[in-house]
Length: 585
Image 1 (tube, rainbow, N blue to C red):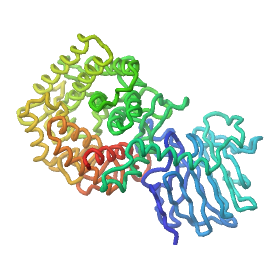
Image 2 (image 1 turned 60 degrees about the horizontal axis):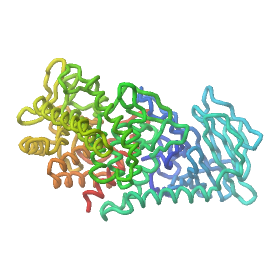
Image 3 (image 1 turned 90 degrees about the vertical axis):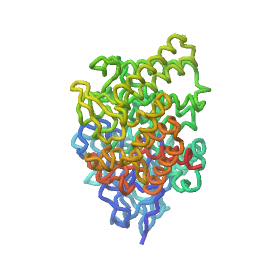
Image 4 (image 1 turned 60 degrees about the vertical axis):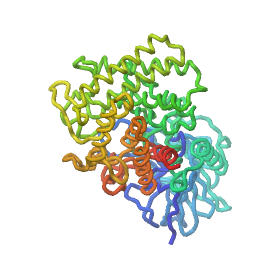
């Protein structure tokens, strides 16, 4: 009996490569078992970008690929390497790779045939053979171009394509995704299968070598899988998509977008490549409106959305400055970020400070970054210590960056003075003598839930009196936030704990924010302890960004877009690499 041998399981994460919107996946209800799977070619351009209805069915699985022998479908297993998907049966196998951003290639050498069954859309173009020997077919909202390279192609009455081998038992083909009518690219301009695999292997190995060529021994077993996850979710400018600088998308299909505060965190995670980290941080400001607000989610096709995420960019900029990552960055690029970050900072006090007290508020749950956390149950507009602490960090970062590029001393000093004043207001407004609270700016209601985010005020570090630091840390450790797998986003002792997205799960941002806060507050040993707990949980369970706080396993009950589970996330994979490297030595 054939068994699946996977570098990464396509049930855990669709299989792709850097910059590509093409991917391979098992069927939603499939398993790794022999005969209980169907391999699909997918297009991920539109996956999760709108997020208007998380329960709607995703239509990303566009082309089914099935092996045939003498006209009969054969049971298969799906295996993977870092650069290939292998569809195996008792008679042989076929191999597939992503050759270019919009091109996949496939090859079979055992006399097998391959059936390609495109999803039939209501308004999609009918399959059509073109003069150069290729076939056009509907591929989601765009066109697919079937490119025969060896063997022959026949269109079946049901709209599927049958690829049969040549006299040597070989078939070879490609599928190209295009938003316009296929051009005049000649067949011999497409790379060979072997050249495409070699190119992908070289690119991936170089990515591994420049970022994390090794990890401490206990974390080494998942190093390459974590690097692969981040690598495959990198999106680069291509002249077609909305990406103007390199960004890191969250995951395949479900949230196939690059989110603002995640980019700031990725800049920290990937700072071993300073140029990449800087470009990722710059990308946050590529889609900024006239008021200074930056867009939350950038997908292949993007327009300004109404939501946003917390202003974590200052924390990231301070990190890059602290670690010498900007030494080779041109001054004009730094000035551009300075100006755009300044505009982003002012946005909060112009448009989110409804009571005019100099402390700004969020106006909805999504803006907090925590979706279903209990700390905003007092209602909106919600003033909270964590969000304002991020803004203090932005002001500090602006003062520091400004000095490095010749901004007048008076302007830099003004940022520092505002950071000091906002820190005083945060303490006065949100510290009740024993712990942090949140306030409804309209009603004055005070919320003292057991939600971890409000304790991110610890990011203020040594700006805070030592008594507040010590009491904050003591409260976290004594009130149900500490698990064997990291920090719980909602205390296990809270009446609101419910395993939600952010209502009790162990999630990436809670780990990074609290660990950085502990370091800045002079508690590096506690940061190391919790960072290692989380890295071990990811090592043992995979790069899922939401873990069960009681078991450490993925929260499989959280679904979206009709998928049976969330997939591996670059948020988790990059954090794994960062924590394992930083705390595991």
